[in-house]
Length: 390
Length: 179
Image 1 (tube, rainbow over the protein chains, first blue to last red):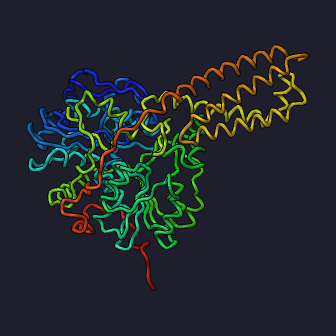
Image 2 (image 1 turned 90 degrees about the vertical axis):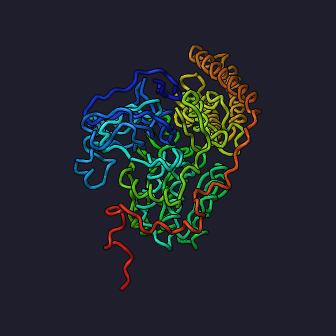
Image 3 (image 1 turned 120 degrees about the vertical axis):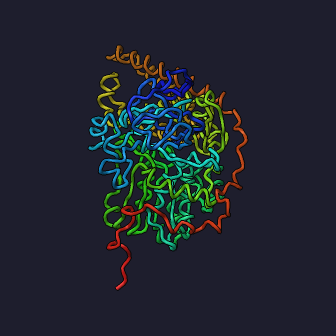
């Protein structure tokens, strides 16, 4: 089969690789009908995340049709089922899965020792996302092996299109969880850093959840335009001070809820602290650039909540812990507990509350995938979200 | 390693290697500048230029300024040309110190190193000058992409019945409390 394969930093190729096979009883194989490039794939593309190996298949936003089912998954799936595959692989049986904390499933990461070294504990296995999270082949391919498939799937109806459903795999529940864990009240101003795909979903989620005012911060004009279309006010950080504008918008009090949809690769040249991070990163004294975290802690209203769906990979520096503590802020983070939200979100798509396909700007075949990684990373051609049809 | 701000002429330019080289030269400027500012005596002694410590420190400040400019600006081209001019000044200063220098070997080594860096600077500046004229492509209009099939007003606040949030919200005991 053909697949998008990682060969090194900024080197992804469309290669021919062996077809996946059933390896465990609970496996299933799906024929991929649609997949997407995620912003967090760019951390792998630029090789900011450790644990990638030459030959790894990329991709964790995937949907398709079941073509083969292991005997341990036959009660849950049958050939022909149409499924979206969540990016977190879940067993459904461990303590964390039973509590709905699927992204920290205790059993699906087959490289637990690596995750435990990096994070203290294991996290769930993830598709196409470094060997620290299991090194499972990803779904930017013609076929995908789904481990623990009896639990790791979302069955979807034929009445909706792939484009309406595909983002249940990651960015829609990720933006949703980011907003939900802010505990949004009707009086709240919610500030969202980053107008990429997750930021766009977080905006729509905050609106659905009834926020009084949503503000989005970025500097890419077309992304800010899409944010405004979703009901957000916008701040272009290249043209105005984020802190000053947020204080102006909230009568000097700051937003009650702040969402970091940027993560470890904050813009490297916009501010002095970001340049400091970039310089430290260059000499390997810091792995991530936490500019957004610093800004959120500074501007968030005391007793407010910070929500961090943006991916961080390692160590950060100069985080104002004094402000965080003395202001009594709460921070909620985490990879997304996808299956916790998907029944509810599928219903909302069916009812027309939201159509996540609004975010798609580019549609290509698998062979154009490598070029689209570059286009997406460079924010060229108005690129916000790429869907691939193998 | 891109110069990707919205006003940058380099935004989206396919020649990413040139951007990386420019940033590398920026980091190099910072490191060299810091060494010149912090250890002028050692450098002056090694190059047989005792008595010129103040000049070395001034050159260090120049390097640091150029390094910050290269890493902070959206267009690296003028800063890299600035480095080329600085290289010429460095070479002239080293040449002027040759006659009667007790550490000629070290001085010649320094001249060779500066000449090598100068070559990199010239290549980078030349590439940037040639490449920055590339126009950006037209970018799409996303004004109509709300994502709410029923309209923004109809969707606002419709999800107050959110399911699955147990354990992820503010505990009741920490919610605003009125006496």
